[in-house]
Length: 313
Image (cartoon, rainbow, N blue to C red; front, top):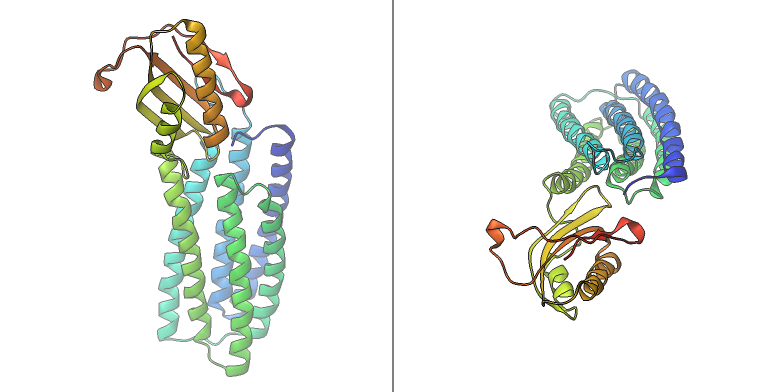
């Protein structure tokens, strides 16, 4: 999604508030974790440091995404958010590994904790993370913001787990519950991070967008009157919500006015059924060797709502 105008400004305001609140909570959680000797709280502080970095990366990415395309950056900076999401997820994976290693060490040598302080700090964190997650929810369709939203939602759930763990330690006196909770938190972090890594890598490697089937796209175009064949078809993502298509389409030897009608139908069906707004179509009158390309056609460019366009004979 290419962020524009007021939407970008609103998202930046939410991110600025989230940055300030998260930094304050990191300081509080780290101090309380050291005082209470709670690995669960210290791991929460570390998790929130990664959330702060995630929010910061998202803030920078939103700024870059709002910048227009240039002659050197012809698609603008739409992948800035994808890169931010990838780095956010990578840091989460490293963090989850550290938490598991430290938890295993504490399971072999339990450390006494202060469950009452654990619960108080975790309750404050659950409220803060819940508010931030709710604010980010409206923009969570963008993978950059969605990666940050998952951070905050995961924090909300993990702080709830810390509260329950603190209560269990308070009533049972079993300190091993604290590192066990940390392992569960790490598993939650790892699960969400791997999901984001898979999606961002698919975009960066120009794989087909999630939910878009090349076979369905080909059938839809070939089903139009006047289209004989579709080949050399490529669909990829410019950003998390902006998809592009390029294809060779074989049609009969017809006047340019008729090929223009077919082009209009193709771009319309791509917009309405597949949310593809950037399409480059090369018309041909006879099949060619795909591996060697085809002779450059005479171009006619049509502008459509949503920045869709096509090229044809």
